[in-house]
Length: 213
Image 1 (tube, rainbow, N blue to C red):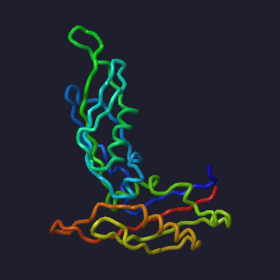
Image 2: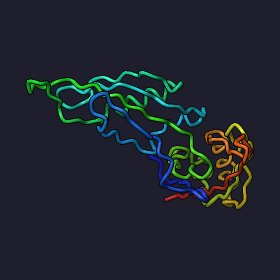
Image 3: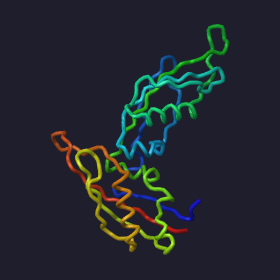
Image 4: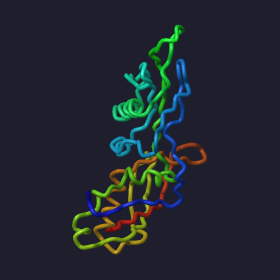
């Protein structure tokens, strides 16, 4: 484990959003809980700008655990499909079903998860997904450099970072450059829309604090 911490807080962020699990439907029992956290969004899917809705069937065995998960309608992203089934298999629990004779029975439930890329106001909730301890530059750690970087991102009409400028330096060129590089490489957004509903360029300010223990 690296002896450091790095965490992100973005201006105007709303920690209550986004919620990726937006709905579910069941063929026999639609109210089986499927806990999904904001941190479940796969980093590789975020970096590739992947989003979409996964519809899948889960088979609940006689023990109440998921025994099988089958994607019925793909999101278009293999990683999002795979993650949806993994989450369902690991987390879904259900009281064992019974047939008309009161004997344990297998149950099939249909679920749907909509994975939606965050917009500029929501990105703060995904801080841990974009920045990790391993990102702390070795040379900055060796020199004992730490501090807070305030930056601004220019977001293009396709939702990708077009430019990053430093508004307030951490005092370390290495930390400043690393912050902008990682933001440009990893962050993806839902394109902002103008009054006519068409995509427009956008900007978001952020702050990341690089802290040695």
